[in-house]
Image (tube, rainbow, N blue to C red):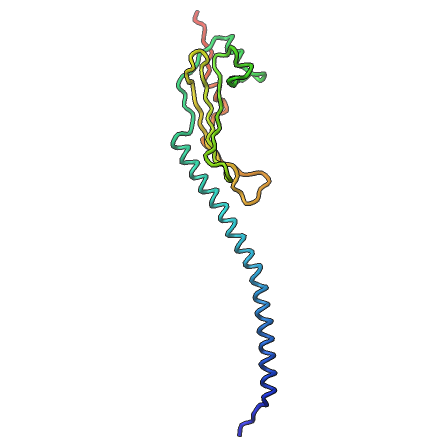
Length: 181
């Protein structure tokens, strides 16, 4: 003969089982919240870093296409004009077009910044052109491309630019005429 469990005792056991499962469900839900936050943070980080890598790749492509320094002519000047082109550190400093120093100068430079993408991250093309004032002939051109920004959180945005312009760009364009004896 089998003993029977009273119905009220089964109901109580089922009630306690449901309460335990309800507690377990709350526990796993609470455990999933930090995991979901970490996963969403990781996905966000990967998105921003991937976007920066993509635009760095595109900037490198643009640099290979038409970036760099192109020297058409080297300007030879006499000693007086050479001294006028020097700054107070003794380095060649070509005046900007429209600057007060540009009056009477042999060569001047102009700088043009054009935005390829003006939202984050910014992509820009910078062109520095050196021109003779006597006939308007282009002496040299330096073209650089750069990416600024694209970070998730940054106090100072990251940047990438290419190609590197030589620090003595102006000095490489101007040469002192040697006096022949």
